[in-house]
Image (cartoon, rainbow, N blue to C red; front, side, top):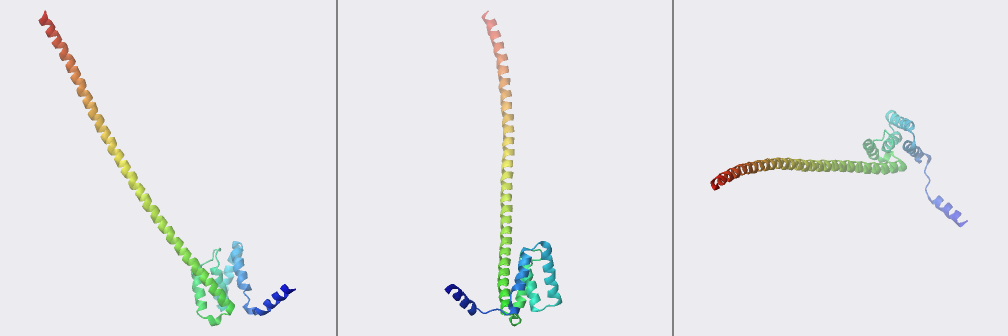
Length: 193
């Protein structure tokens, strides 16, 4: 019983919202566009866009701004939502306290999303630059290794040519020595007789 009375007292102390200050229509659209199928999302977007264009009152413009601010659908446009929400908040007297609260909350959320998106793009660009720099360094190292391999192959070919030349010279000397020794042995053999 005490719990029930405590809750009843707390409920009595909270101010109730007037019917025109209920966030229901805004929240319903945001929920349906965030969780609906693509056809339903397109319908909500088209309806909100048409209402904002045909009857550009505060409610229809806020509804369209909130639809634009809601992520997860093809019509989501945080930059445009940010501009519309700022326009609406520039004239706070035209908004109910609940509408002002929704506009402020979603403006902050959109601004944060835009900052995060910008930071993500910067990090991707930085990562891409780092990858290109690393790829260029690897390409330079590969080119240097290939050049060194070509130089080593050329040096090997020159060394093989020199070795072949030395082998030919040695063979020639042996042949000449072999021919010369047999001739001297023949002369010295004749002298001894």
